[in-house]
Image 1 (cartoon, rainbow, N blue to C red):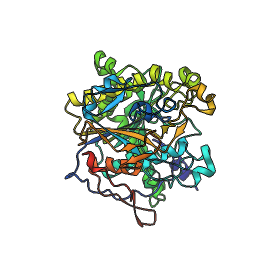
Image 2 (image 1 turned 180 degrees about the vertical axis):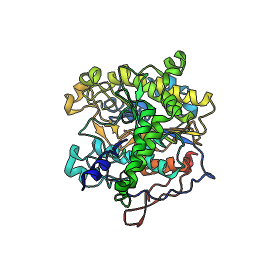
Image 3 (image 1 turned 45 degrees about the vertical axis):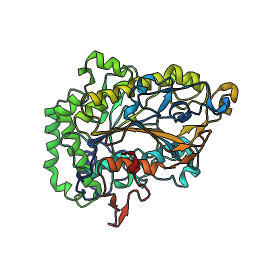
Image 4 (image 1 turned 90 degrees about the vertical axis):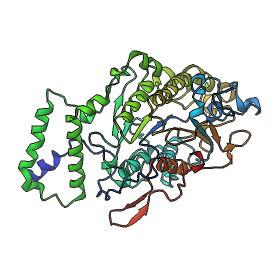
Length: 465
């Protein structure tokens, strides 16, 4: 490659490329509005594997070594019970649909595969066994449900169709597969917006930050210089990589120069009272930001729970999130459940008060449940009072977006170990999201122009609506 051509190519990474190789974008599908119930989806993903038997699917008649010390409480919906440590959410139960029969067994019973299955709706392949934690995201992975949704709806005029916050799980090199667009093209990857434990009101997208005294005007001027080297650029025009890079440039510059984009991320504009209602933690403020992005009409927002490893790693024998290998009940009662209860109940209440809940689908999910029988060898067995990984059964919670609240769908067996009644899979959950968002065209084309279906086994759970 000539030096001039190299300089042009190397100067194109304005927004940068993440995982997956660039491929030609599939033609945009016509947005289906006739059956669309939701305009936006908020996925609240409880990283680490939240304990279904201690939160949503309690078994008060099971032996103590399964049920643990927590008690169920009545809620605002007759027949729907929640854990006693979710009192605020119990008052919003008339909005909730709790699915207690999600069978998400994966071949490793571990995080990487659990993320992949629950975020894409596709069963992990053999590579998750052979590579284990070294199984990084692949360019031909099945796409994240948020990226699929983003690709099928009309492009937002100022913001990306899919935004993820407040972090990208997990810390490199152990980045979790399943959260990227992969085979449908990196141009459909979510925009990652970072938040911090120390400054929960501050959010930023590093790739879109102007630093070193560069103003938006200077950035626009520099960007226009690319037009002066069209002779070199034309030699790349025929490639899918060039098309993808150009699209990234255009979207990055649009975001940098957009006052609407800047305003949407400024949660400090919200009243102190409302901030306190959500809880001034990184997870609470991420949910508040998610509500602001709903108001900005962003189609898909993902909030990945951000744990505090410095405070909880030793106590819970984990990375500080919901992976409670040790001291499960104290970690839930003292730390995880109160923060979740406050933030998620506030989100439902806030959306409802603003008349936005019916047009916003809420989904609470995780990569796994926790093993119903108490005692994890990693924390000393029963003495450590932890719960190990358990992908064989978990609960998902939905609200808004056409969902009929105040119901429990399906059931697990008497120990909450396996689905028993109306079993479903993560594919059905993903299909339910698409159904609510009015995405009925799930066809895509590969690099050779061959059509394929993005989720063949993902029949929606229409009984929830």
